[in-house]
Amino acid sequence: MSEHSSTPEVKHDHSNHLEVFIEKMIFRSRWILASFYLVLVATLLLVAIKFVKEFAHFAMIFWNASEAEFVTGVLEIVDKTLLGNLLILIIFSGYENFVSIIGAAKNSADRPKWMGGVDFASLKLKLIGSIVALSGINLLAAFLEIDTTNKENLGWMVGIHLTFVVTGLIFALSERYMVHEGD
Image (cartoon, rainbow, N blue to C red; front, side, top):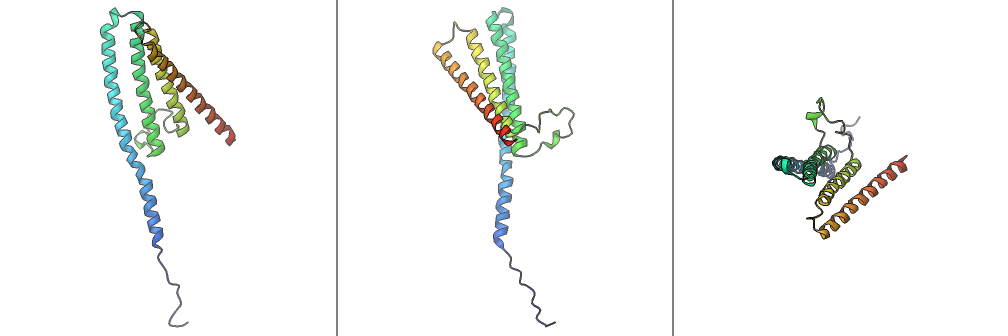
């Protein structure tokens, strides 16, 4: 063996370090979305405050309310409940799909069954379904007070509601087509 052994010279490829750094930054950037979900949690609190306000108003008029006013009051409470449910669905599903698994709920006895099982496609369908339900409630409330409802606004409400319904059907059909095409 010679004194100058020919060991291969190791060259460091610094472009790989840059690539790894960029990929880590991109991967960690998902945590920026956490601020969006925290704002949605604050929004849920505002919806809860509005819910209590609606209930207090409903409780005050309850005894003297006409049938239409009573049903409208109930619908407003249901409307806020559905909106709260929609926010929870978006917060939980969005966070788990795009940021991180909610570890605090992993072994919780009261963890919702759907949590962790709603993918982005299912989230879109649930979102449009909730929007259709909210729109339907507002439309029903307007019809219950047809005497005081602006007819032009009512026409717009019907048109927008039908747009939501058609959009929901298109989403559902496209998801069904995509699932069956994958089989």
